[in-house]
Length: 409
Image (cartoon, rainbow, N blue to C red; front, side, top):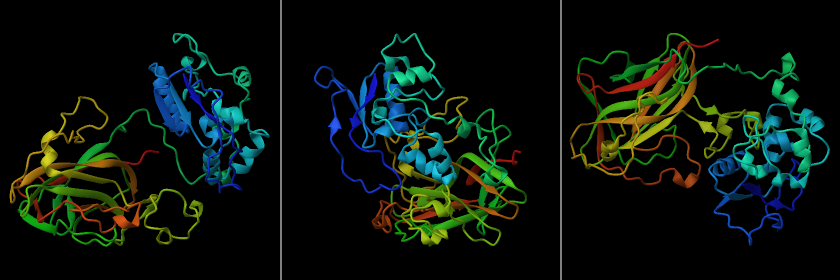
């Protein structure tokens, strides 16, 4: 059983965003005194509600609280709320949805039974036998005081004209990883190069491990490698860095890696994960947005504490992450100063399109190289000591593994 406490509060709207205080919560629908609730969920949006569904599926009761009662319901069942309105506004659909969504919101929507994501109700929510499953219906929704909203046009996409089509292409896929993806080895080479063959001659390059970076684009004490694409290519999935590295001044090595993208002229590109005009406040270029904006994206990052390499987990056959390295971090084995260690650094999955002439970049350093969410974290001290030396060529086998494929129509 999963319920959401109804909060006596009016619906939030774009004209009323200044609410910062909780109003009284009506506990009458939740028998706190008669029953025990082993799990309390703070926040009942899609994530909170899905967590409640999962707990209920396993027979664990939960109660969730949210400052906005509309957040406690599936958007198709309960109409608009502030979160969904923001998404629809960015798609240019706000006015249309307001017209189609009904007149008033039911403040009891916070107590609404919600749809399973595949269109069926979880039977435990209705107090039914777990063996029974029912399809959500208008009648069932009206029984609990909320008629379904008219979202079918939105879901079908029939309201779009050619001029309204977003500048994206959806490519349906039957499986993941994407078929025909090739996990390509790009070897770390001299002259800032990533090469398809390992350099024959050994060489080294190094950086000051305890360096404190003041900005992710300054490039201080970082080693850069680049690969130029000769045709349009997609990079989609999990990458990792195999690196031979040593530390002359400590018995551990915290190594950081980051993938990125440069244009044909070598300018490092910064991606904003929402259109600039839809930021609050809107901006004209990414440099106008604060460097603490979590929507600024330079590329996927990865890190590994060298002494934890001994905790690597043996991959299970057939897992979708392939040979991507994972660690329990449950123990450590020191790396004596000056010893060359072969480390496998996992890098978060990503999806990047490279045009002909553009560059994939791979940076290695002793510090985090992406944007921080708080200003005081720039230049903050970390645990690294000594000087890290990267060994490339010959039998070092220092290389990057990236999932590449030809563009799909």
